Structures are given as C-alpha cells and as structure tokens.
Length: 101
Image (cartoon, rainbow, N blue to C red; front, side, top):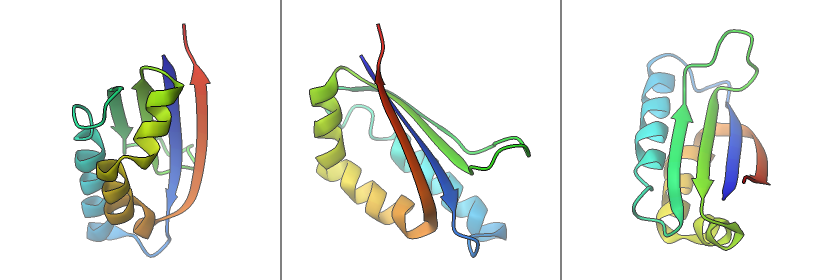
C-alpha cells in the first residue's frame, strides 16, 4: 500500500464565506474520487486544523501500490477536481508519498 499525503495552504484572499465554500467543495470533490480512480482505496480530507497548524487542508489517501499512485495523478477525474477545486485557491503544496506494510 502507498500513502499519499498532501498539505495545502490557501491563498490569503480566500477568506470568510469564500473560504468556507472552497474548503467544503475541496473536501466533497476530492473524497468523491474514491470509487472512480482505480487503486484509490481511501481518501480523507481534513479542513479543521488546530490553530497551531500552518496548513489549511490535509489530504490523506491510500492507494494499492505505486502504479495506482501514478494512475491517480494523471486520472482525468482527479485532474479535473484539482484544476477546478484546488489549484485556483492554494498557494503552497507539500507532498509526501510512502510505502506502508
């Protein structure tokens, strides 16, 4: 199994009601990829970080293997969600992928 973890920081101008909408749409649309992307077995979005955090959103996903991760990254549904609900609103992205037992 492969874990694919992303941390995002939103752009400063994403605030107030817009921030609430953006976070809700990111969560709903990213989590909806499970069952659509082959090999993606679990995906959780955290949008309620503690005040001590310096990231606004965390994606924690599990994929069957490294090939599934490669497929996920280029899958049309994933690309559409990223281009519509994530990239326009984020300024920083950190990624860590690792193998689990």
